[in-house]
Length: 411
Image (tube, rainbow, N blue to C red):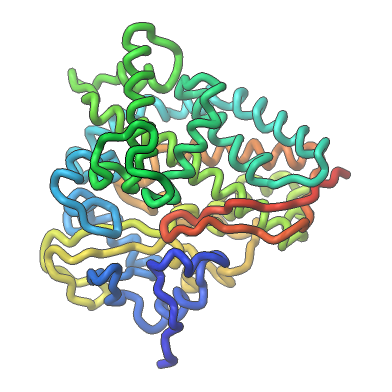
């Protein structure tokens, strides 16, 4: 066995140059269910595709509710305050999913298409006019946040505020003073330990109150009016859902688009393929999401003594599933480090949570946004060229891009 690379996969600096593929490749081959430590606390790192799918399909054994999905441990008070749909197990998860589903039915997502296309067209036309852009500021950040605030019913003038709060969540609580945004809540009780979460909660509550008094045809109204067998979202559940939708609906799609355009810059042959055959767009969407892997990991907690791939795991052990590794498992994806828009879409990438109850509720919307953007790029004959170094977000949770200089040309 070769020596393991001397990189800690929970250290945010390990992702300064992107996913440390050499570490995860070594782990998949030599120690696929690895005993690791984060902040002095042990956990199991699950790095192979098949093992990750096993974990996600078995919430009874590998719980999202017990200990929640954070890498670090929280007090019971903090878990009660923070808990969102991703931090629950069936039957509670099924209940919340049924209440949230009306906002993401096929019909409703289809209704977002024209607004998404209008926003994408405006951004791409502006990018062409500018010539040299920061892809993040010009395209990948404004597109998803403008879409999500539009469908939530957030006034357009507040879009930048939503981006600001979402960015602070990625950076964590250390980027702000504890009392920022008028916060009086202990940071432990807030998602990402950030006062920005308090600001999002308060904004969401105020918007929800406004929609109760004056319903609109928007997502917030759909959430507060959602009823299944007489059951509705509580005020806390709604606020947590709003915060999650703003963060996940913005940050993950933004990350996918940023990494996708970087992939086209560094693999221009793939963009040429897309121009030659627009029928590849659906496959390109899936490959962009796989290659980007917007969320790097999620945690589960073992509810009983069990085994995973022959490794004994004790009740109460943390089990961390690494999408950043499973999406590049060479036993599933041949030549996985190659960006290939012709790659078969099955087996599926696991960026949206793999098979199982926690598959991302907003995945259809993310796919729609990326597809419409690619259609706009092809329709305009756009190419993206290197114009400076990519700057990555320092995070061990989001595979984010802070800046991506690029020159845009049109043929």
